[in-house]
Length: 66
Image 1 (cartoon, one colour):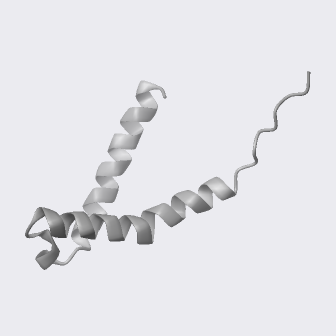
Image 2 (tube, rainbow, N blue to C red; image 1 turned 135 degrees about the vertical axis):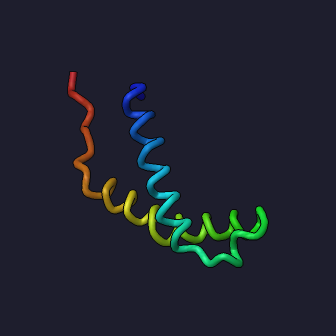
């Protein structure tokens, strides 16, 4: 992965984190267990399906015949 791609992932991840934070109940942010459960739940509900949808729409590269 290029340094530029890594940096872009960091920037996008920060933006996602800010959105998830704004949409998390304050009571879930009181301890590490609550934070972990909230992040996991939101990632599974909102982020993972979007990544899966994107990947499912890509055309697979077929190996070249020799």
